Length: 81
Image: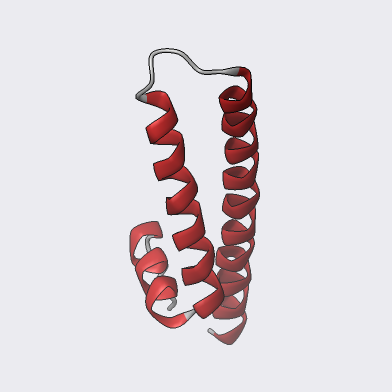
């Protein structure tokens, strides 16, 4: 009988065991903090709007990469059980 790991537990496990996942998560958090700084401003310049768009795209790419690692881990866990 296999036990499915919850999302939060799996994320914590990957953060502690997978260097690539940890690096991606840290980079994602950095972009999130930069976006939060931009959102605290009342008015964004054209350059800041472009920066906001680029940060959102980078965050999404990192999220997709992290999701791929999670899926790979789940597939491997399922195959070994």
